Structure formats: C-alpha cells, structure tokens
Amino acid sequence: MLKILFLFLMSGGIPVAIAMAGSALLYLLLVPGSPPFVVIHRMVSGIDSFPLLAVPFFILAGNLMNNAGITNRIYNYALSLVGWLKGGLGHVNVVGSVVFAGMSGTAIADAAGLGTIEIKAMKDHGYDTEFAVGVTAASATLGPIIPPSLPFVIYGMMANVSVGALFLAGILPGALMALLMMITVAYFAHKNNWGSDYKFSWPLIIKALGETAMVVGWPLAVWWLVEKMGLPPQSTVFGALVVLFMADKVFQFQAVLPIMTPVLLIGGMTTGVFTPTEGAIAACVWALILGFLWYRTLTVKMFIKVCLDTVETTATVLFIVAAASIFGWMLTATGVTTAISAWVLEFTREPWVFLLLANLLMLFVGCFLEPTAAITILVPVLVPICQQLGIDLVHFGLVMVLNLMIGLLHPPMGMVLFVLARVAKLSVERTTMAILPWLVPLLGSLVVITYVPSLVLWLPKMVY
Image (cartoon, rainbow, N blue to C red; front, side, top):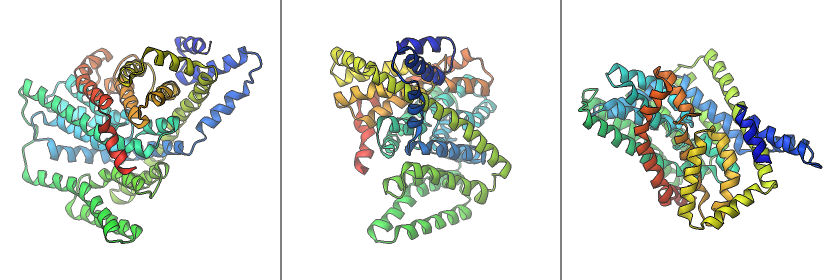
C-alpha cells in the first residue's frame, strides 16, 4: 500500500519530498493502531545527525567561491595549461571543471557557475553551441565525484559509511572521467580539423605548471616536515600557509589558493585534524579569507545574498532528507526492503549481475528524481543486498553517485540539462541531442568504476 500511495501522489505532480512524507502519513492514518506522530518523530531524527551539519557549510563554501570571482581565475588557469591544444577550449572546459569540483561539491553549481563562462567563450571562438553544451554537461558531473561532494555526505550518513573514505575514493575515478572526456574532445578536434584556440606560450605554460607543482608538492613537503623532522604540526601548517600566500603574491598565481581547497580538506581529514563536518567549516573560512581579505572581490552585500541562497538550498536538501527518512523507515518497517532483498538474492547471488541490475535501476531512477531524494530512497533498499553479497559500501557509493549524476543530464527531470538549456538559450530537445555523444565517456567510466573496484578503493585502503 505504501508504494501505491507514493506512486499515486507522484503521478499527481506532487514534489518528491512531499510525496514521500505524505504517503507515509496516509499509510499510518489508514492502518489501525499506527500513531501518526511517528512521522514527525522520524523526520526530526532523520536530520538530527552530526555528519549532516556538513551540508550547509559545503553549500556555503561553494557559493562563496562561485560569487567571489574565483571561477574566472580557475578558467584562466585552465586556459594557460591546456588552451593551446587542438580543441583547446574543450580541454579547458574539462580541466576547469576538475578544479571547480574541488570547491563546489555539486554538478548544478559547476554547470551554472563555470559553465556560463565556458559556453560563452566557446561560442565566441566559433564552436558549435551544441558541442559547448555537451562538454560542459559532461564535465559538470565531476562536481560530486571529486571531493568535496554533497551526495557523498548524504550517502555516508544514510549508509553509515566514512565520508572521508568516500572523498578519497572519488579522486582516481574523477581523474579517469576527466581523461576520457579529454580524449573525446581530442576525437572531435581531429574529426572536425580544429586547431588550437590560444598560441602556445612557454611563460604561460611554465607558470601554470608551477601552480600545479605548488598544489601537489607543497602539501607533500609540509607532510614530510611534520612526519620526518618531528616539527609541531600546528606551527608547521601555519608557516606553510604564510609561505603559500607570499608565493601567490610574488608570482601572481591565477588559482593556487582556490585549488588548495580540496587539498586542505583531504589533508585535514586524513591526518585527523578535523572531521568532514569540521572540514566543511574550514572550507568556508578559507573561502571567506580569499574573498574578503586576499582577492577582495567579496562584499558584505554579496555575502548576505550568498547566505540567503545557502539557507534556501539547505532547507530544500534537508527537507528531502527528512521526508526520505520516514519513507525509508516505513519501507523497512513494512518489510518492503526485506522482500526486495529476498527477491534479488533468489534471482542472483553473483555480485557482478547485481551491480549490472543496480546500475540500470539507478540510471532509470536518476532520470526522474533529484540525487538527494534518489540516494535516500535507494540506500535502504540496495545497501542491505550489497552487505549480503560482500560488495564494499564505499565502492557502491561511488557507483550510485555517478549513476545519479548521469541521470542529471536526461529528461524529464535532469537539472543540469535544464540549467544548460537556459544558459545556452537552446531548446531542451537540442540540448538533449548535444549531450548524447558525451554519454560514451561517462558510461565507459561507469563500467570501469563498477567492475574495477580497486580503482575506487586503493586510496581509502591506503589511508584508512
């Protein structure tokens, strides 16, 4: 009955969150002896979680970076690094999204923020609007894969999995996805005989490589000083940040400090300096320092607007989580999850077959539900089966999130699809056709991530 009520409300055009909470309430009202106040109790307890405190802070950090002029710096850095290649702005699009993914944590923020700059630049350089939209949509899916990631926080809370491990697990799959996208750009460039968009310049290349080396090498040098020489961690890190700011001032780097955001997060979590929730607060502090004090591109008026936008987005996300909490609890209490698990295990006990079926299900669900709602509905159903089949839950979390990100590119409910259609001033139909070729690298990445779990689990196992 619960499933019938939910589908009935959904078919009436009621928002997913209200449909989940409403179907649970109606079920309790229709079944004798069931107290309706359980709905409120379960919804409140569903969001009474320390890891969920990271949600508003990661949203705030992404909004601050997006509104403080950081996106232009990231774009210019990517332009210096790969703009001279054939199909240069396509490669810039992918590299820029990789960097911005380390700050935003969501695909929609990537598409709306950096995508606006990228699509305009590509159109100005003579690229087809469809190609610009397609590569922007595909690269936007990197947002929740490369840490930090809002979907990973939600999944980690629902599946009782370490958020830090999920963040680490997304690094290598994100790199694989970016590589396959750049190969696709190179294919189109060769097919259409495109040249480079910017002249090769050794000074610019050396500067961009210097920024990359600083981002990679400086944290390793700090770690070596702390671990090998036995220096106090707090004073060493403080000194490292001072040197970092001095280097940025002297060499006029484009994006070293913004790119350091995910490095600080991952480094802090893996060394035990802070939890993922505290890391989200640290990311906000870092964004405020860059916006207000260093670049001075953030004003009080902009900050108030960013805070209001963050409150609105957070309220939406947490209401979905609360509604899904009571719905998931009802699915378990009524035996639906047990029945589904039994049916699947009767059908197959081969992990690879289950992962294939789960991928098909999640791709389908991702076309109709927003990722947060989809995660909160699917986790209670699929995670128990994974546990019985011995599938690592960190690995499965990556598979689930990537499936749902691909779903964001499809009608009827693909949010990235609609955002880019509005940005590029294209019809939804043309935008959908523009995205179709880019499903090849995305689905190829999905196959590798699904069936080569060592790619996902290598870094988490090495650290944890």
